[in-house]
Amino acid sequence: MLAQDKLRVYLSVALLASAAWLLHGFIPALLWAVVIVIATWPMRLLVAANTKYSDTGVAVVMTSLVAALFFLPIGYALFHAAAEVSTITHWITDVQKTGIAVPEKLSGIPLVGGSAADWWRVNLSDTAALSSLIGQTDNETLAEFARRFGAQVAHRLITLIFTIVVIFFLYRDGEDLSRKTLVLLNKLTGESGDRYGLQAAVAIRATVSGLVLVGLAEGLLIGISYALAAAPHPAILGLATGVLAMIPFAAPIIFGGVSLVLLAQGNMIAAVSVFAFGMLVLFIGDHFVRPKIIGNAVKLPFLWVLFGILGGVEVFGLIGLFVGPALMALLMTMWRDLTELP
Image (tube, rainbow, N blue to C red; front, side, top):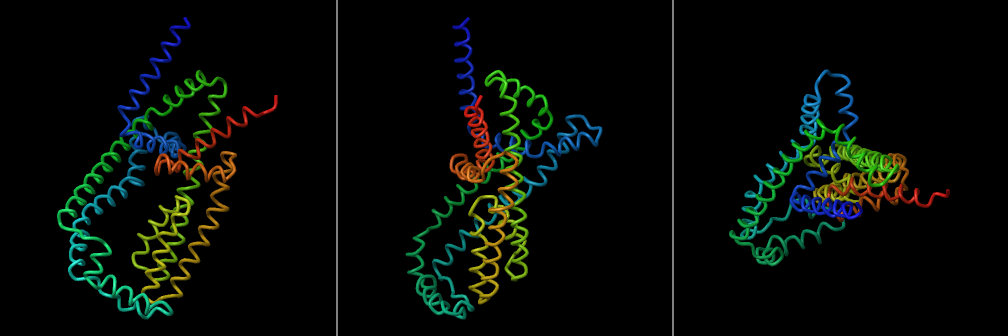
């Protein structure tokens, strides 16, 4: 019997490893689907309770809502990014021949305007200096870059489609799948299996709320400051700020760049105001609101939440924003179980 148990374990590990190798290219899509479904499962229960739809009908409704909310804007952005590649490559080729003219308002910036205009004239307006700065880029190199970029966009679109398909099946069969997963966890880890599984789900849901909702709220507030400062395309920049605000320390890339643009236009007060307001919003959101939402839900100090977020991004990429804190919550739960006095 013991030999049979060992053989069953070895066979199970071999099958899991084979499946992971077979699906390794789609693992990010699977993880995204699981995270999105767990985070939106309360909404799925609400739709099921207030409609007479079958599980398939509820899955269709929820998948349509998620696709409209998350994936259609992403697909739209990828499509237009691919369309703009040819424009960018032509622009790079042209500016190498003609240089980039000095903006009229650059020299009017107090204190630094004259020096900035001189540097621009020497390094960007002069074609020889510009070619030396950005390197020689011929049409063949640009065409190869455009081809690779297009292939990456196509791969991302296929991943999005696959994610939507997986989301549909998770919404439809999620109750049965979660029940069987808890049974498996009980067999593997004993009585604590249920608690570990539920803790992971709570951690993912809390992380999504803390990162996504708080990030979008920060983007909305900072986007309002863009509009008040008359920055170009404030709605698009506000959305980009909200997306990057989900990643710790990333949002200043956007509002810092907007501040530099406003400064280059000679609007120093607006530039300083946008940057200062952006830092204030991030400070409140990242140090007070976000720790309360995530830390209180999973009973995890925000320092460990931060380690989970940053480590997750480093190891898993963007999906690590949500997987990392869930793993840290499970680790902390196991630590409490092992160190708890009898």
